[in-house]
Image 1: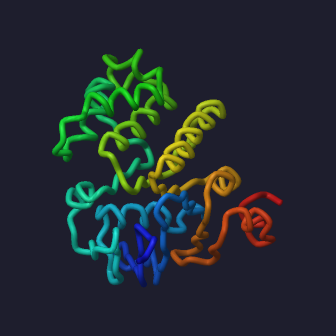
Image 2: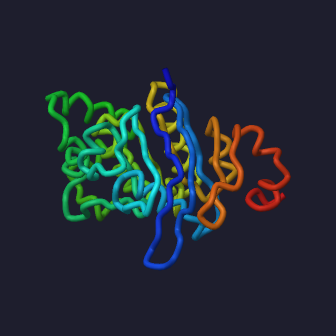
Length: 237
């Protein structure tokens, strides 16, 4: 029995005549953090959006938990257990913090919403204090907490994170990434796109490097930290 929760085979994606992704193949195993690093414009966000069905692939196949989901709509993928925290967070700024969080559970059929809301508040105590405030009035770090918490409310099997540290103070980044590693330890599988390559490799089990829409390097994260190509291109060494 295969251990992967996500398997992508020969995936390509175009924007008009521009090739964004070309012949991408990768696997993410259950219960691990996998990071995706690369320069701006390498195709990282496009790949996450394609996994979430926000972009349509030109060709290739996406399997989730052993099922071909290539032609499945985005809401159906959420129902299967895929949740994404987008770059820029995508909050409803004129709704309260708690309203934003509860929207993450819109597709769930069970009624344990309050229990899961309490879990999010325990992970991010400041959100309990701010629960009645408009999301648009929060700091950037607090908004990122809401975005992560909203995704957790869907009880994801696979959590996709797009640049979770972008624009945040170091102390907030540490808090966000502590939660990410805790989620992995509790069994949530995580695929994280992160501009801070050292941070991404430090917290992930395995990693892929995208260059010009192709997988250029892949392997264990601890090995990549010592890979001369990765060090020179992404670690400033």
